[in-house]
Image 1 (cartoon, each protein chain N blue to C red):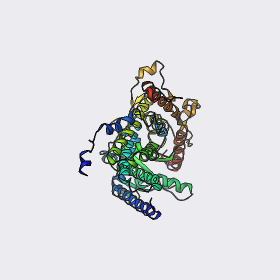
Image 2: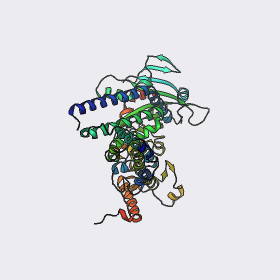
Image 3: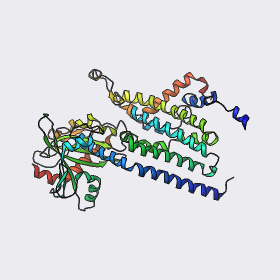
Length: 252
Length: 218
C-alpha cells in the first residue's frame, strides 16, 4: 500500500515534470509556430485576391502583390501607410493590427484602428493590374471563431474574391465555408445598393433565389446542415465591412 | 536469472502477434467493445480527417501505453486514473505543438480532434486494462493494435460517408458530373452523424455474420 505522503510526492513531481516538458516544447517551438501563423495569414490575404501560394513562395508573392498596407481611424482617415517595405505615413503596419482585438475595442466603445490591404493584381488580363482593397474579417461560427479576408474593387463595392477559414466547424457541414464552391459564389456580389446604402452580402438559408430581384446581388446560398456557421459568415461580413463604410464613401 | 533470459519470448511470438491482430477483428474496440463511438461519429464525415485522426490515435495510444507500462510499478492505485490522463493529455499537446511547428496545415485539420483524442475512452480503457499490468513491448503492440482496430472502422465509415454524402474522396470529385445531369444527388443524410451510427451498425452486422462466436446468447 502506498502512503499519503508518497501519493502527494508522486503527484507533485509528476505535475512539475510535465509542466516543465510542455513549457519547454512550447517555448522552443514558438518561433517556428509564429512564422507559420504569419505565413498562414499572408496566404489568406493572397487567396482572397485569387493567388495560390505555397508555403515557401508566400512571402515573395505577398510582397509582390500586396503593395500597400493602410491603417484607418474610425472616421475612415488613413493614419498609417506602409508601401513597398517602408512607412509613408505613421508607424503601424496593417499586418500587425489584429482584427479580433479591434472589433473588441469597437464593441467597448473605445478608439480602434482598421487594417486594410491594397493589392495590385492582374485579374482579367495578365498585363493589366487592378487595384483591390482587402479587408480582414473575424467572427463567430458554431463551435469557434471564423476568420477570413474579402477583396473588393477600387470603388469598395464589388466583391472580387473571398477567403474564409474556421477553427472547429463540423467537417462536411459548417467546415464547407473554406471550400471553393462556397467562396466562388461571392464573386461579383455588391456591398452597397444603387443608392449607396450599405447592405453587405448575406448568406441566405434556402438559397439566394428566395430573395427579391434587387436583393439577389447581395445574397449567396447557405450550406445545408451548416446554418449557424452560415449565419456566422453573414454576421462577420456585416460587422466588419460596416466599420469601413466611412472609408468606402470616400472611394465612390 | 540466466534461465529466465533463455526463456524470453521472441518479439513477435504468437501471443504478441495476437495483441496486434485481435483488436482488428474479434476484439475490435468499436464494433465489439463499443467504445470510442462518439469520436467515430464526429470525425468521419470526410475521409481525410478520419485518416488524420487514425494516425494521431495510433501515435498517442502506443506512446501512452508504453509510458504507463514503464511507470506501472510506481503508480499509486488511488491516483492511477489521474496519472493516465496526465500522460495522454501531455502526449496530445506535444503532438499538437510539433504539428503546429512543422506541418501547419495538418495541425489546422487536427485542431478539432485534439480534445477528442484526450477523451477517447479506448485509450483510457487500454491503459487501465492492459498497460497497467504488462511490460512495455506487449503494451506497445496492444496500443498499436487497438488504435488500428479503431482506425480501420473510421476509415471505412469515412470512405462511404464522403463518397455518398459529398460525391468526393479525399476532397477530389469522384462521382462524374454526368451523373448529376441524369438526376443523381448527393445524399445529405450521409453527412449527418446518425449515418455513421448506421454504417457502424452495418459493419457489426457483417462481422457477426462472419464470426458466429461473437453473437451473444440471449
